[in-house]
Length: 151
Image (cartoon, rainbow, N blue to C red; front, side, top):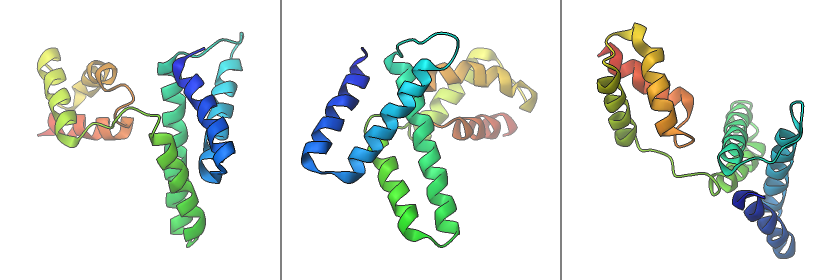
């Protein structure tokens, strides 16, 4: 079993004992999402820590989008609940890259690939994505690449 999945299970038990409702429901949801991903496809398998991070990143993004939707609908209480869950999920994710760090990675990928102009975006994204891996959202990376290639 992966170390991250073990940590999630241990935190589930601890939050149950501590009666921490937000952490309890968030970790339960995260473990459920991991289990669904493990049995998806033709054959059940055990996820690696990197694969679990991808699942948790997807779940955190769902929480952020739901909070925004609730906020726009004037439902502040539900929006705050989603943001609380997102905060718990982010504790299990690697630290996000700052704008400066992301820009440096994009610059390195551009010089590495020799890309010029917006038509080379796919080439640069292919070089940057493995280096970013879970530390920045895809839309944010794409926007940084687009800005560098256009400017």
